Length: 302
Length: 333
Image 1 (cartoon, helix red, strand yellow):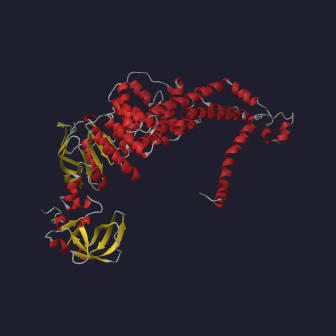
Image 2: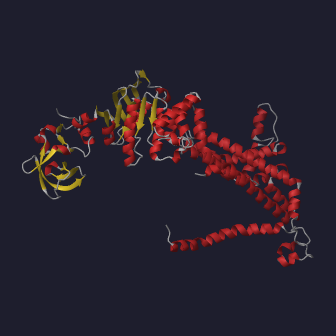
Image 3: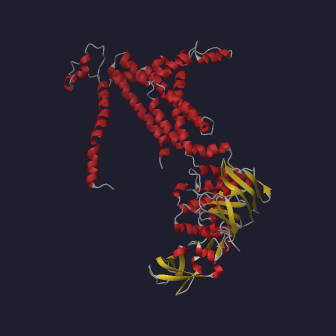
C-alpha cells in the first residue's frame, strides 16, 4: 500500500516516540540491573559506591561490586518464599473471585431491570476508588473488629466479631482487592454479553435449549476471549499490588514480592538487595505470563 | 402434517401496530412465500409463527392445535435465519446435532440423522469444520441441515439468501426448491425479492404495512392483481401505472399495463411518445418511453429492436390486459 517514500517518512516520523519509549523502559531497567550487582546500602560506610565509574568499582579496594551476592541473599531469604506464595495466592484468588463474580454480575446486569444504568454505574464505582483509600475504608469501616460493618453484622446475629487483619490478613487483602477488580471483570464481560448475536439466541431458543445448557454451550464459549483478556490484564496488575498491603499494615503476614522489595529498599536501606529482588520479581512475572499465554493465549487467536 | 392457521393475528409494539390483524391458512406441504417491501411486517409475521414474538391478540394453530402460548421449541417448527445464526464455536456436526442433543435423543440416533442430513446437503466432508471455515453457501446449507434433522412440521426461512452473491443465490434457490420436493414439507419463506417469490412459491402472500394485500399463486398475482400495490410489486420490470386523463378514458383512477402488453405501432395507438433510453438484454429490449401525459412507460420490444433514444413511437395497449383500479387502489372488475 505504502510506497518506499511514505514508508521511510513514516519511520522517521515515529522514530522520536519509539526512542523516547525505549529509553523510558530501558534506562530504569538497566539501572536496576546495575544496582542489583552492587553492594549498595544507604547506611553503608561507603554510600557513594553507586556513583563510581565502572573502572573504580572493579577496583578490589573499593569492594563495591557485589557479584551475585544480592541475588543469593534474596533468593535464600525465607521471606522470599513467603512473599512469592502470598503473591501467587493473591493473584489466584482475586482472579477466581473476579471472573466468577464478574460473570454472574454481568449476567444480572444484562437483564432489562429498572434503573439499570444507575446500577451499572454503581457497580463500576469501586474501580475508581484509589487503593490507599479503599484499604483505609475496608480496614476502619468494614473489617474493624469493634466499629466495623462486618463485625456489626456478625455480632447482631449473635456471633463474635472477626479481627480480619489480625487473624486472616491474607483473606482480608483478597477480599479488598477482589472488591476493587470485580467491576473491571464485570464491565468487560458485560460488554461481551451485549455483543452476543441475537439471532443465535433465537436459534438456541428454536433448538429448545434450557437456560443452564444455554449458559454452558453458548455463553461460556462466547466469553472465553474476554475472560482471557481479563485474566491477562488482572494478573499484570495483581502481581504489583502494594498500596492495600502497606496501608492496611498487613505486610508482615500477607506481604507479597513488591512489599518485600519495599522492605529491602526502604526499611533495610539495602538498594542492591531491593534491586535484585525487583529483577527476580520481573523474571517471575515473565514466567507467569509465559505459562498464562500458553494456557489461555490460544483463545485470543483467530 | 403441517398446516398452519393464523386467526386474526395482531401484533403491536406499544403504540406502533406492526400487524393490524392477519388471517391465513397454510396447507400441508405448501411452499408459501411472504413478500413485501422492508418494514411490511413479513419477518414479524414469520417470527410470530415461530414463537419468537408474542401475539398481541389472535390465535395461531398448527395442525389444528392452538400454539399461541406454546414456546418455540415445542411448536415442531424449524427456522433458518438470515445471518444463519450458526454456533461459531461448534463444529458443523455439533451445530446440526445440537437441537437433537437438547431434545435428549440418544447419541447413535443423532449420528445417523446428522449423517443423513449431511449426505442430503453435500456437507459430509465438512462435518468437523467450524462455521468460520465455510463459505457463505456452505453455511447456508448447515443452517438448513440444522433445520432438517429436527423433522419439523414446517420450515421457516427468514430471508435466507440475502447474504449470498447473485450466482449463489440462484443455485441455493434451486436447492431449496428441490429440498421442498424431496421432503414434501410445509415451508414458509420470507423475502423482499419478488423474483424469489415468483420462482419458488406455490402461493405468495403479499404484505403491505402489515396488511395481507393478496394471497395467490404467482401467476394469479401476476395476471390478476387485487390492488395497485400488488400490481406494482409483482413483476420485473414493474407494471406501468398510469393515472390522470389516460386512466379516466378507461373509467378508472389508475390503470396498469405490463411492458409486454404494450405494442409498438407505426401510427395510431393509444399514446404517443419518444424513446428516452433502451436496455438490451439480448432476448428482449426494454424501452423507456416518455409518453407525455401518460408519464414514463416501460415497453418490452424484441431483442433485435433497433430504435434509438429520441425516436418517436406510437404505443398500443392490449385492451384485454389493462388493469383498472379505483381511487383507493383496489381493482375494478
